[in-house]
Length: 184
Length: 280
Ligand code: SF4
Image (tube, rainbow over all chains, first blue to last red; front, side, top):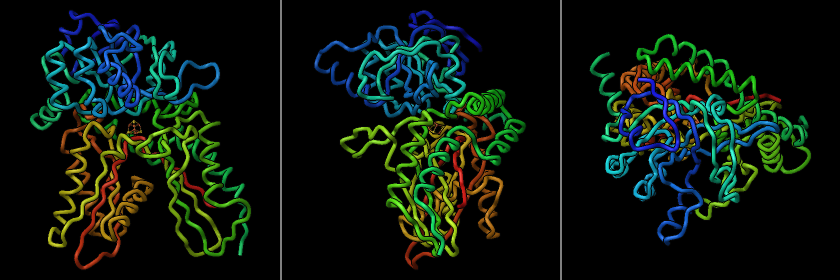
């Protein structure tokens, strides 16, 4: 089903999402990948403030290619989410509501998604040129020294994603393969 | 003896890095077009539509097809009657990569030390493979390799008794384990035989063979076709979201090996299977 949601996410909107829904996100989201996760995780463990509030927010696992002059951003598609699995439960316990990436998640992450009424979306991997068109602004807000891995605040309009793991813990990757085998 | 200036190598590599990241080869484009017609699920077709649109935008707007513009793998097939003049060949190749990634607005994804992990900020060094071949020409192939799919690649040191069924099982294991992580539809490069490193090298090189070109060895060709069929029955589908097109091709290369071994390498590539070749 096609759905439209606003970011940051509210609990009500998340609750209604189901694995397989095609969702268009509009609002503010943040990018962070391996190196930024490592730093934020260290800060959380030391009880320090994070550069972004996790509360209700969506993290997009993405490191863009550089923007040409006069452009907002370069190619901007998702990276493999499982590399962030180690840090994810901790982030979800601190208020994170959504993640955008590609690929499977660990059991621990699925359980944490259920516990925290959160959601994992996939954007189409390898469609970074197309996805960049849904980003209307991009600003580095932390860890500038990490280059492409810095934390960015993005404004997105109808950013296209698919619900892979919903708040009930259903996993579209498993369901889709099963359905395919049964029906085709 | 023919003299080639290393500055010419630099210039060509620079252009090839930019080209590879913005345009796919004709065989990759047409196999994607074909897949769109054959895909059995509607979500799968929707994903393939996005991939086609993405390719078009990349070329028109000069924005990389994928943000992971890869680690640059460079195959150098050097005629043995060639003499290079200028700076060290390796430096010339890396200079080409440096310029291509800088001037082409490509992402810098290389860290200097695998554990200290400080970005080199210019995507160098490249991974360079040299081969000496007959003649007085140089064939350069630039392969920007993304790591979503690279991370799902495997080497299996099988036993001779595992035979052809063992090889097939190894390929299917690697592909199903890769699943959605490797941005399917994939291209699967396989090296069978040689030694531990030789089969990995063959698997990488196999990815540069056009996807519509089958092996010249009859039993290998059969294995390529059978494996593709089996992979497309796994249901993984475009984006891993379910469907009948999980891979575009299985390209297998073989080499003599030791009486005691059967090495198999599976190098997985995503649908952004980039390679540009030029002969100088
Ligand atoms: S696996 Fe390929 S398509 Fe996917 S993000 Fe990496 S380079 Fe891009």
